Image (cartoon, rainbow, N blue to C red; front, top):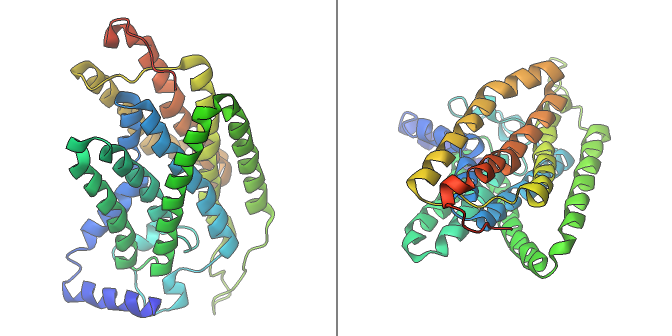
Length: 324
């Protein structure tokens, strides 16, 4: 049934001469490249706790997704059924195994977390609806482009919802026991280290094509796993540094605060666009992705907040600081 559904969408794409394909490719691309800037801006500018909630949910998903992917090792739809032909350039960006959808487990906590945050303010509820719809649209885009089955997307959305709920419960617990946060950070760090060891040493399918080539190269599939686990490691280190020594106050939704935070997003774009390929070329795909992910998370969770801390007098005129 899942393959039949993808073939139906493929026929529809053909009937409209791929008219929707560029838009669906953009939806998928935005989820894994620039979407994170929205909760990061919220963390810097509007509400530190809500930003942390969204980012924590995201990192939980990024930790679990590669472990599930590299355990299940389910092939992509076009490998299972040669009649499926992914649309546009989707096949070049569809790295890793198929289950669950990594694009959806990225959009789910990031856009879903922002849906939760904006729902809390009545005047922002229309935005909340748009954020929620974007999660569904991202999942559908993966089916539409022919790179994921409905099961891949359904499980990814389920994982995203569970991460949002679990993070909310975790925050409630830490509100009552703030002294225990360091133990959770240490546990997460050790879990990620164990995860890296697991995906490095485990056995992978070694099925061959008729020409004698690997259907899927496990070494290439592990690249995203190193990068995703590196995101959580970077977040854990940065969160400890920020809460221990920086303790910044959000810049505030004033012209000063908005301008400064928009300027802070520029290095994120530069790091993503230019530093990532340099580090990967220097250290190799595995360790390069791991190191870049750590540095990238550290920048927006701790390094730029340190800049905001230095600018507090200019931004707030000596007001008290938020200490989440």
